[in-house]
Length: 154
Image (tube, rainbow, N blue to C red; front, side, top):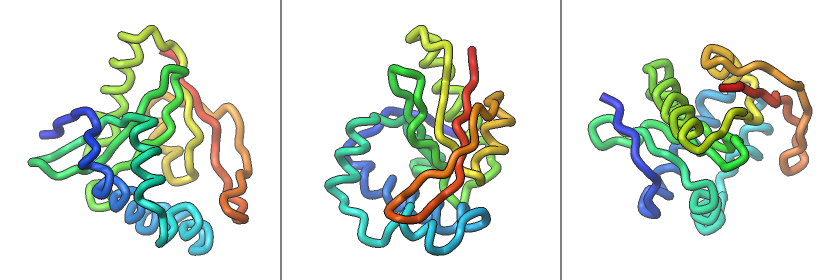
């Protein structure tokens, strides 16, 4: 069973590992080695990561005490981070996290959810009711990467 809870500072290292390994093992299907290396670099500073996690205050998905995914929801309706552990893909974790965020959003009066979505995550977002607003090329540390601005109205 998937349990969803709030982020705690002690989750930072595990979330960094989840992010890193998911980008390196899953997103490599749609992005080059150079692109995934700048997206999830080997030398990502844990203090910078902790500040980012504190600022976005994600929700954590667990199965039997193991962290298997995370998502955030900002006051503007922005979903900045949405990652499922690379070993737990296609097991309903993403849907559970997103439904949690939709419920939180509803309670906060958020009517538009939006995100910058990778090529890899686009089908998942589409299954969850999001539509592409715009395709774009972003620059991450010198690498040009394609992603999509997607949105869903509640």
